[in-house]
Image (cartoon, rainbow, N blue to C red; front, side, top):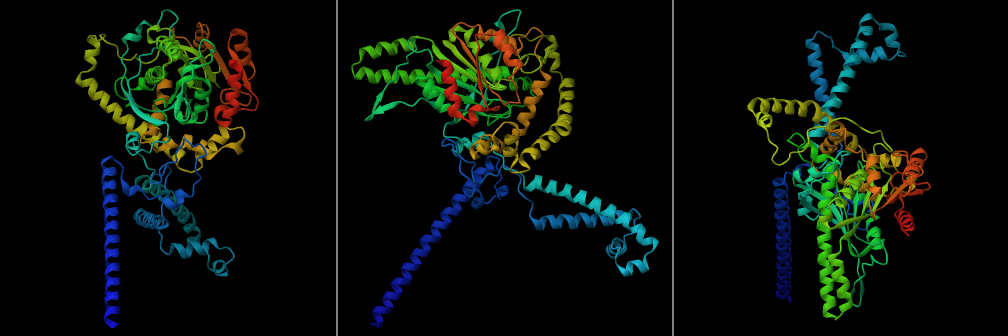
Amino acid sequence: MIEQTNCAVENGSRSRDLDEIKHNRKAAGRRHLLINEKRAAMMNGDDPRRRRSSVRMRAMMPKPSCRSLSSIPAELCPTYRPVPMLVQVAIVGAVSSALLVLMGRMGHNFDMTIPRLLSALWPFAEQHALSSSSSDVVIVPEALYFILCAALLSTLAKLIVQEAFYMPDRVTTQYLAERGELPSKLSRYRVVTPVPVSMPRRTHENEEDALLTTVPIGVHFVQYAQQQQTNEGTIIRRNSGRKSNHNKYDGIFLQHGFGANSLSWLKVLPLLVDRLGGGNARGVAHDAPGFGLTDRPDADAEGGLHQYGLENNAGIGSALMMDALSEQRGAVALLSKVEEEEDSPKEDMVADETKEANKSVAIIGHSMGSKTALLMALHHASHAELGVDPHLVVLVAPALEGLTMPSRRGYGLKAPSRIGTSNKREELDHGWTRRMASGVYRAWKRAFVDMPLHYALRRLVCGTKGFWRNGLSLLTWVDRSILSHSNVLFYQWPSVRRGWEGGVVNFVRARILSSPPVDALDDGELLRRVADLRDTKVVIIYGSKDWLGPIEGNVADTIGRELPHVKMIRLEGAGHNPFETDADGFMAELEKALE
C-alpha cells in the first residue's frame, strides 16, 4: 500500500509538472507573440510604450448601436492620458526648486519664506499681531509672485510632459487596414487616381478637363451592395425596372459635410441602396481629403494644396463611382450567367439591355458636400462617353455660396499642373535660389504657424473625452437625448489617424487662399445649371431648426421662385443632420418626394 501510494504521489506530481511545463510554454508563446506584435507596431511607427490605456476601462464603454460600426481598438486612446500624480508632484518640486535658485540669484530674499508667509497671511494669529514688521509685509508680494510663476511654469512643464509621453495614439490608415481594424464592416481603403474635374466657367465649357493631371491618393470609403433576395439558396434577380420606375438607380454616391466623414452615412446608406437600388446597386461614400481616414497630402508640395479642393474631391468621387459601377456590371453578368443555366431567355434579354444602357445614378451631398455633388453631376452629364446618367441629385442642408453663404469672387492660386504647359519662367522657378527660399519659408511656416495650429486643434479636440458629444449636441442635434454613442463614434474615429489635425488646417487654407476665378460659376449658378439638365431631378432637403446653414424663410422662397422645378422638402423640427437623427423619417420623406 505504501509503495502504491508513493507511486500515485509521484504520478500526480509528474502530471502537475507536465501541466506546469505546458502552461509555461503557452505563456512563453504568448509573450513571444506579444513581442513580435510590438516589434511590428514599432516598424509601422506605432510606439507601444505609449499604449498605457486600460483595456478594462475601455471594455466598460458602451457598444455602438449601429451594427456596421466598430469601436475604436482598445489599445488606441484617442484622447490625452492624465499625467500620474507622482509625476505631477515631481514636476512641481523640480520647477519650484529651480525657480527658488533662479530668483535667489536675481537678488530676491526667500529666507524662511514659508513660515513668514504663513504668519503674514494669517491675520487672526496673535503672534502675527504682536510681531508684524515691515519685512513680513514685503515678503507677501514676493511670495505670491513666486507662487504664480511656479504654477504657470509647472502647468507648462506638465503640458510638455503630457505631449511627449501621454499624448493620444496615432496610427496610419494602412496600419488599420492591414490589421483589419477599420471603423466599419463596410470600410475599404484603396489608392485612387481622381478623375480630372475643373470648375465650370460662364464663358466656355470645361475643355480643360483633359489637360488636368491628378495625383493618386489613399482613400477610405464605405461601400454597400444591395441585398439580394434568396429562396432556398437560389438568387432571385431584381429587375432594374428603369422603364417602369424611374426611381431605381444602379449606384448611389454620397458626399459628407465639413467636419464629418463617410461614417456619418452608415445609418441611412443601406436604406438608400435597398429602397432606391434597381438590383445589384452599389452605394459609396468616401472621406474627402482633409477629413476622415483619407490620406493627408503635403500641402507645401507643388499642387499639394489643390488636392484639398472640392474639384479634386469630386474627381475622387467620380473615380470611385466608375469602380463601383464596374463591380455592379460584373455582378449583373454573373447573375445573367446563372439565369442562362436556368434557361431564362427573357431575363437574358433584359440583362443584355441593362449592360448596353447607361448607368443611372443618384448623387447625394450634405452641407459642404452639396457643391461636390453638383460638380460630379455636371461632369458626368457633360461627358456622355462615361456612360453615367445623374438622374437624381439630392442636397441635404446645402451650404452653397451665393445661396446660403456669401459668394466669393477674385483670382485664386495657380491652377493645377497641365500637360505640355511648361515655359521658361517655370523652368527658372526650379532654380537653387527659389528652392532655398522655399525651404526657408516652409521651415518658418511649419515652426511658427503649422505646429501651433496643430497643437491648439489637437488640444481642443483631444483634451477632453466629451468634446465630440458636447460639440454635436450644441451645434447639430436639436434633441440631445437621441445623441447616441454611435453618433459620437462617427466623428471621433478619424482622430486616431496620424496627422488628422494637419488635414483640417490644410483644407481650411485651401478654401481661404484659393478663391475661384471671376468667370467661374458660383454655387447658386451651378445649382441652376444642374437643375436644367435633361432627365435630372434635383431635391433639396432641409430642417426647420437648422441654424448652421439656414434655408428656412428667404432662401427657401428664393429657390422656390427662381427654380420652381427643384423639389423642396422641409423637415419639421429637424436640424443640420436629419439623416443621422432620424434615418427612417428622412428616407420616408425622400421616397414620398420621388413618387
